[in-house]
Length: 221
Image (cartoon, rainbow, N blue to C red; front, side):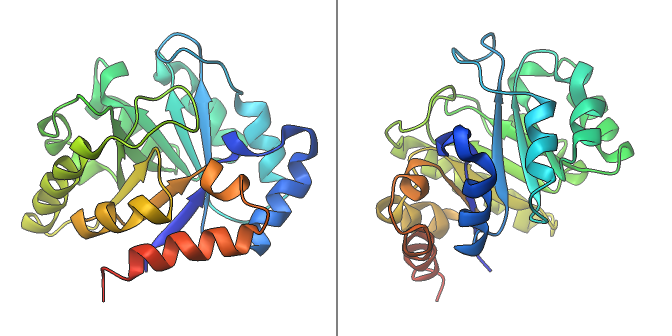
């Protein structure tokens, strides 16, 4: 089943508890939390305390995307805060295999992310360690950016490698995702769609999520 993961980066932080409740009742499959440090990406968002606050108000899986330098220093903190999936970037890990193994040791699902210009081969040797590969369809750092179509062939490459090796690894796509782009990424192999402004920028969150899901499911039939 195609999953939709609303990104809390686009939520109203002043009423975070209510926003979490709204999006959960609207049919979200998991919640995506973007952690930015102002070094790896040109923005600063939040840390483990925010993850812990969200954890108190939902049983949905928390998909924590670490867009930070030296992620190894913070893995335990995010695990303790309640993350279910911890995603690190190829570009920030000197010893990617070790980092992903540590996430698994902490009892969490390891995931690995690629920026738009990063070659997919960089994750092939760790596919057996992860539960998910995140392919960025914008350059990370800010919400509301325009979708980069050139990433679609890369989604297809990663999906083909996962199928070839018969691995149980989901493909997540993040950046400029909405009803108008969902079909192209799902047809290429995406299983999880992260959507921020396309969900929280809509007055009817349930309708927004359903539109994205239906656009993607339409190419799976």
